[in-house]
Image (cartoon, rainbow, N blue to C red):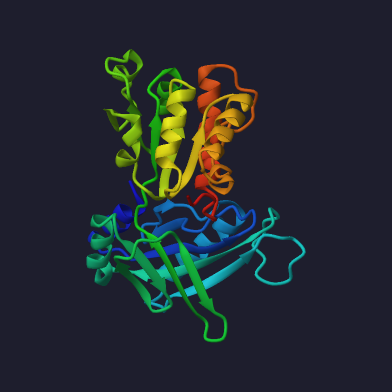
Length: 317
């Protein structure tokens, strides 16, 4: 059960709920920005803000707050370093995080239902409370130190979409690996009747297309990831020429180092800029000396996870 469904269920039961939201995280903080945890009056909870001693301590604080009346939203800073003198979390993993506390009861039921039912929207958190807004954005946190005010905006549900160009054995293995993760998978190939494409039950969608028009099938945006594992040099080049100059969170291409160098040199000779080409992850994947199909798929998935979890958008074509 998702956290918003959990909160809504407890509010329907006329319970009070304390919502903890990580509005900022710095360094190797265990609780990343956007992590949430809800603690209800029946002491059931949902989610996490990072675990460990810090989470235990703040859950106990939330339980105590549940015995009191409604309070104004506040933030609590936690520093994960043993040598710090202030806001010590009790953890030594370094980094820090800031957690906002919100009191929710039956008067918030309508808002929570809207959040639950409008995954395409964003939630805006401030010291005044929470509201649903339509602006599309990744997480943003602003704090005014002098007035002790803050604003944190995040999508209710930002769907990370992977577009895999190439329905062969690597594409099939990658779809299977990614199906265990939080990605929406779209598989594209130019070959009719490809058995690995037909047997692939892991992708959310499959299409046979003309690779020269592949940009028509791939959404631009910072939640779009492009993986090129096509049949060979010729199709890889066609795909790249269709996609360079467009905006994606990530684009990577499978191939040997030599093949990559030759292909990129050809593209530069045709007028494509080095700055555009340098944004392509190639050879694709984390270097784990992959040899088998599934090892390659795992190395690609690991790279996608690394980019996804990075707070800074690395690739903008």
